[in-house]
Image 1 (cartoon, each protein chain N blue to C red):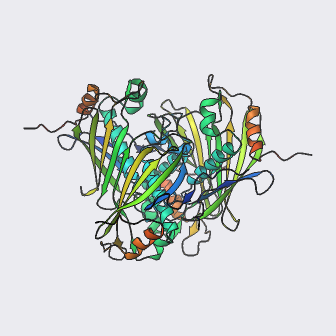
Image 2 (image 1 turned 120 degrees about the vertical axis):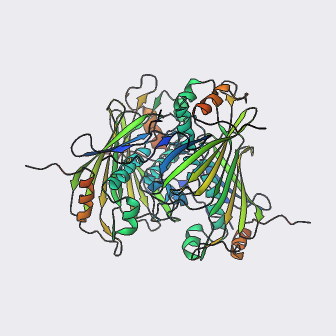
Length: 156
Length: 156
Length: 156
Length: 156
């Protein structure tokens, strides 16, 4: 008998998304027994780390190994239903926008029945480490996201 | 010689804002030595706790003592310049919107020279504890914010 | 191709231990790129949550569902070698002492080659919720730990 | 009327201690409304940061500015009474041991009436940054602690 994994990642359940699973941990919840709002951003960042790894460029290799970094310039979350201690959650990441220097991902956090609990949007901006200036988004970033199953919907 | 306070709160430096000061702590920063993005939401929530206390209804009394709670339904942040370990920051809270059930505050996080580092917006929604349903924003909430110096700009 | 799980738990690799795996996440590390010391306690608590679940009494069910709780009365950690961002770690839990009201577990945190990074010891005390007083350790606690593979070494 | 500071540091209330004040914040507490155990280590580290600053060598200057660092090799806490959301706490730091490479501080966390809530002990070890090896404790460390009011009790 194997103990079920408590945090599992996998390939997209649907075209264009990458799914990470996690459990709500004791330190994640507040005095009301529900996930403290800022923790939703950690859940999205966890999914970001997972999808970079799935795409072949783990963040812990990207940070020292590339001349660029991808700091966040914007983050936002909408909370639909409380997430409770002990729950299994599924974070579905999708690519929603690619600008000159920026890349935007949306993370839908869902409960066991697939119902939406929260959505998080993170906007990263490519910055050259040496000059600390914005640079065009490196093509490698989109290649990595593509290998994790993420791509922009084709436009007509 | 007195040791300078490391986290000080005070009355509005300008009409309509409430200012909280804090220091960037060691556990707040990431591997790059700058504040981890999700921490900005903690800074805003700290200011929220301070201004409720200044308005006479500390959050730790409001949660058990009122039939309503004010959970967040939306949170967002824009990051302008890195916040670094050891820095003194000033969080200026202002009231930006009041809806039927909601109240929206904006938190401008500034460095020692007043330069903007990040802005955080938090939207709270009044919920009745017993029914877990939205209710009209209790008048007491605006009274508390008012006593902390926050009010909506008068409209023409 | 399956994406490797990033946090997996399993049955004891050796008699008397319960192993949980985890990855060092970006928010876990400090400005030096190594795990912030207090985070080691979170890793041990994560293993505690996992082994309770493996033993059939997940913490999120135990807290509301039992007349007792098991708050910590002592926690300690020894740090041997730095744990770095991106590393896979293995946390091996073992039961080291059972007193009148207390139960003590030791968590050995190991790197990919099995080398010791840190050890954490957590001492829980059984407390009756209603009276807030110490009570003898409920037998169910040892039964749960036993089902997760943990027992005290037999003494001569 | 001035809003009372919510986190204040000051000179020793008694010979040989350095006191930092803080408030228990909403994200600090767990589902039971009491401070999550690992957070006590953050409180002690906050006091450590404050006393280094009071002694003239803030940690954010020490880390980049000295050839040595003072990582923790041991941390422990004893929990006496719950610390609750909204409480003002006082952390009294004292110097309890100086070894060849190590320096040990004890942090007594007290409530409003002075009653002990928790004690935390942190053992730091001096390490040369370049070689990553232990070195004798730099004299500057004791000088800094001394300027913050901390010294070892004289022995007979």
